[in-house]
Image 1 (cartoon, rainbow, N blue to C red):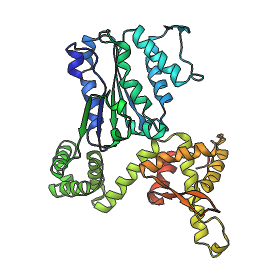
Image 2 (tube, rainbow, N blue to C red):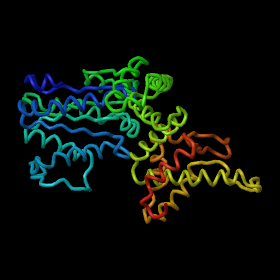
Image 3 (spheres, one colour):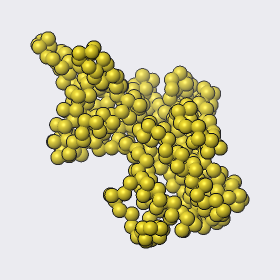
Image 4 (cartoon, rainbow, N blue to C red):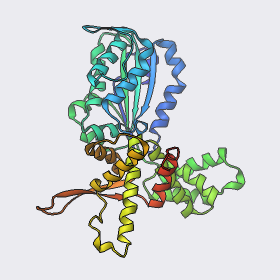
Length: 375
């Protein structure tokens, strides 16, 4: 793609990069475009590069991503849109995805913009929206600018889900000609990566080859990445105990996931923890046989979410939205949601279980929300 832009071969088509978390996808693409920014800009003065990580967008949606792109391009306003006149500002509210897409296309066309857009963790958007409308709209956008030279938008979709392409429509896949698979690191690769990291960032006395080998072995036996390996090495140097280092690394990963949640997702998670602790109290009570609610369900947790919202003077979301807020936490492993049938007469309920120990999740969410009044 860099070669296409710098050698004046026109706008590149859509690209899809996939592989496990920490396999180098984000690092490669950000580094490539950051290091070559001035060179591309020299060839194409109206070149723009935008990187969006959907992990940092709370609950991602087609609308929020379009809004983010247009807010980035608002420096090119005003722009004329047929049948709507001159758009001088993008309103914060009151516009839908269709309107945002229309403005985006007109800005690019009118201002002759060449834009490379990287959407990281696209699988989060696909899973939330239950469709691939975003990928289709952006992978076909080049068709709107045929005949133009270096005018348009070239998307790069990055996914942690190796099998994501098998879940989207064929018409979308056909419009993404470039697909790159980032394969997991093997033991020897992890070992040498860690050796290089240690060589340039640690004192000689802080590590030895056995330490590096032990960390590489632990990571290679699981489903973690090179990024996790670096974090584990750091924690191993601090604790000098592999089990403590693994526990601290897991806490770091959970903390990272929780930081990326929206405000109401954090409140919802805290409500779930409140409900979980109340259920455990009931199960350990001498009077446990008198309690009716002894299973943690969405309905039960929703009441605790509302209580937390009231303490924060935040307007609670409706039950349906509460359910949707928790679904991404099931994908990340923080929670486990399981639909259980109680028979024809009693219906069904969604049970909740903590995906990690309470001792790991509770400190992470407490630390993240410590600025709020009820902590």
